Structure formats: C-alpha cells, structure tokens
Image (tube, rainbow, N blue to C red; front, side, top):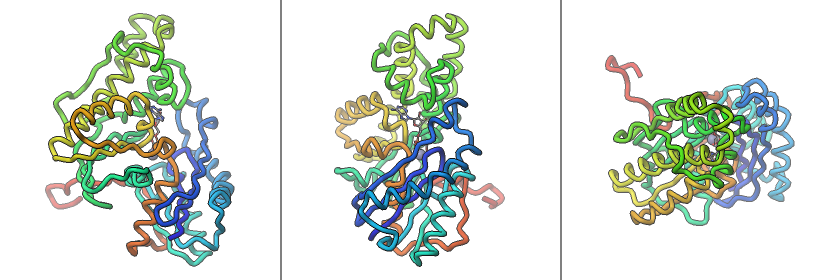
Length: 341
Ligand code: KG4
Ligand code: ZN
C-alpha cells in the first residue's frame, strides 16, 4: 500500500512515503534555528512555521519517492501527543488531502510511531519486546505485546532524559537542542572526573530533575568560569549519569519480564554513548538490541507512515472529525476508585 505520512507534533515538519513496508522518501524541515534564541521550542512560532513548511515538505517527499498525490492509497498523520497548535497543522492537512483524494486517513500515536520506527530497520524486532522511548518529552519503558498493546514498566517522575540534557546545555550556554551538543562535547571528556547523581536506583521509574540542580550547585560552588573551562569533562559526567540509569533500568525491566529483545528509540536514542554502552551491556546479557536507523530516531514522518500503513492495511481509519490530542499515553492510567477514569 502507498502511504503518505505527515508529522508536525513539535518543531519538525516532516513528510514521508512508504510502500509495502519500504521507505521511499523522508523529508524533515527542522525549526531549530527559529527556536534556538529562546533555548527551547516556542509553541506559537512552531505552529506558524509548520504552516509555511507543510506543503513544500509534502511535495518534496512525493518527488523524492517518484510518486504523485494520485498514487497515494492512504494517509497517516501524528494525532498526538504533542503541541496542540503544531499537531493541528499536520492533522488538518492530512484530512484535507484525504478528502480531496478520496482515500482513508489514520491518526497515529507519536510514541508508538517512535517504537515502530524500528520496523523500518534492516533487522526487525518481533513481539513481544521491551522498548525504551527516550526523547525531549518522554522517558518510558514499555512491554510491547503487539501493535497498540502495551504495558508500562517504568517512566520518569519529572524531567525526560532529553529535557535534562537540553537544560544542562542551556545552563552551560551550549545552544539548543542540547542533547546533540552534549553528545559531541562529551566525546572529548572524561566521564569519571565529575560525578552526578543516579536517582531512584531501586525503582523501575526514573528521575532526572536533580541532575540539573546538581549542575547548578556545582556552578555556584566552583564558579561558572571554572565549569565552562571543563565543559568536555562536565558534559561527559552529566551524560554518563543519564546513560547509566537508562541502560540499567531498561535491562532490568527486560530481565524481569523475560524479554530477549529491546528497542531503544526517540531523539536521545541518537546519543553515541547510549548506543555504545547499551550495545555492550546487552551483548553481555545475551539480549538483542534494536536502534532505529539514526535519522529515524529524532522526529520524522517515516515512522508515522510505517505504523499508519500497518493500521490502514488492518482496516483502521479515522473520520474527518478526528481531533488532535496533546496528551495520549500508550497505557491508560487505572480508573479512579469511584470508577471515573
Ligand atoms: O524525539 P525527539 O526528536 O522529539 C521529541 O519527541 O521530544 O527528541 C528530541 C530530544 C531533544 O531533547 C534532544 O536534545 C535529544 O532528543 N537528542 C539527543 C541527541 N539528538 C537529539 N540527545 C542526546 N544525544 C543526541 N545525539
Ligand atoms: Zn518524538
């Protein structure tokens, strides 16, 4: 099936074309330069930039795939979670195209799409598997039983891992998005010189907000100038604290649930130290690790199109009154005691 995928949940406007599980094109227009002066994504700017970029990005994705609108048999679009104004741009575009072309469309969950990006790799995981979704907004470990069937094994209680990296980079004046810069700086540094806390060691959940505080305390104690002279070592130590707990807790969850395959996905899965350390640890335990191809770790529409194709082929489609949702957990919390969820 020929499917056009559209993604606009945060600060990337993306479109992709897949056919029968194969990726034919993937175009990503990043808004990094529009938000970097603010040290984070400004929702109002993001929505406006999506409106400007969406049509040219879709047209480019079709051109790169050697296809035309009339070849498309279905459309997949990110429905949530994300910034509501940003999501609405992609969703409205998808609905308009589906209506005009007379083809079905389906709204997909951004987190599930991140996980299913691994299905576009050369080596594909088989259900059931463990998945760590680690990005700027999420740090969740799931047991993935099948498409749309998840159990939550652990989650962050405060900041996401990517958020912790972005906040550190902001404190150190390293620019935005911080994860990429810290990754690069840390390669030159020694991770053992500055020690940062590993919180909630015995819990399946994560906590990263103390890391930023501990960096702030260090900057106060030793002086900002000192810390800035030691950036590679500080970055390496800070990153190591995050990588350590991500690897340890995900492997523990896999062990406890007897899962031999682990998918690591989301923007932070692009981190070189996380990839290296995870691979070593997984080999030692005899577990198989799956990272989506690097370009499919951060936000993209290929993962949306790939998941959407499976859904459409299984007869799932949405009606034109579908709305965007800013929150959409893969696992719903249990209902309240009085029965209201
Ligand atoms: O999945 P994503 O593109 O957007 C969200 O859904 O959040 O993830 C963005 C996050 C940002 O926090 C960014 O700093 C982080 O992924 N990131 C990285 C790397 N590349 C992106 N973190 C560490 N190392 C990287 N190489
Ligand atoms: Zn994402």
